[in-house]
Image: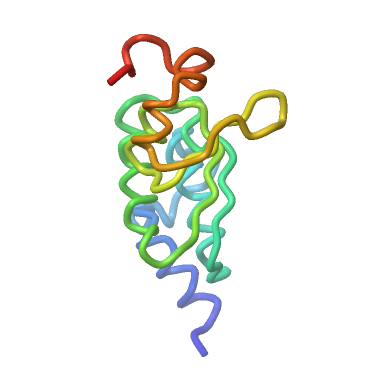
Length: 130
């Protein structure tokens, strides 16, 4: 069985944070801190990641790095993602459930969600219409 040190090193490499291992968390950017949070989770070797708005407060470059990390993790981890950045959700998700007032309004593939008139009216606006 790998040691905790081995697991944390692998998690840092996977999350792209190995080069920052000697820095304190306080000195990291917001996006780097969010990736560190994912690395900390990965060190426990989970099968499922529950991520609540991992892109919140990130700029475009940091968001791209986080989406690349999530894409890398998809084949080996189940990911439940709560996110308001719909462009990011459509880019990464295989299945989407849209919620209104705590209840599911629609669930399906990104294509089905994008085409759903109720979802379009509630969330997506004209720029996402087919």
